[in-house]
Length: 221
Image (tube, rainbow, N blue to C red; front, top):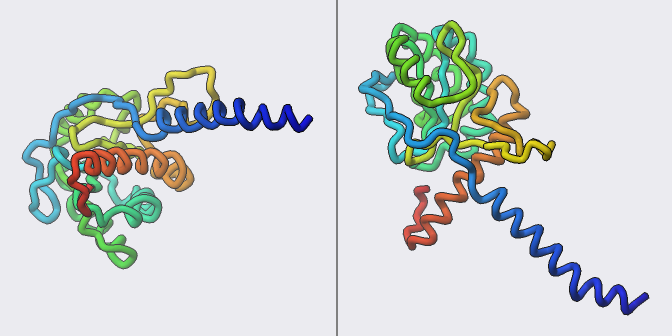
């Protein structure tokens, strides 16, 4: 009996450990590209007048629609579950695309968040309905905007302007980590604190690892 235990420890456990860590590296250190090289924003107006672009930024991207205030609870969820944890990173931004004419409502959302957090990483940019439709369509997502040009989902866009998510290649695997996921529903705090947080950590890990590899590890991502 003791001999069997020793043999198991010497030969089987190392193989199991190897398979575990090997699968962990493949599953959790890269996040698949859903749509590569999406177009950047046009010369769209922002609340504070600054130039907001996707290029060279990790972006949490959302679409408010014309009824911005109706969705303020969703932004509070995103603020609490994701923004507060990571907004200090210089290469990270949260951008909400909204129709022209909704600037006052957008400012009210920022003002409502301000007592809870430092809001410099929150950005609203404004475009015409046709510009928003064109921009969203080229993201090539399965989900659609509603009649107000909004959605409760947010998306992760990396510094190279790739939409990132989960491909869900293994249909037989019922694990949530293997499901197709292109966005994260801000209406559900649990989805933000679980699936989105998991995926967001992978993106941050990727860039930290790249910086370390290039001997450029700084406070920036």
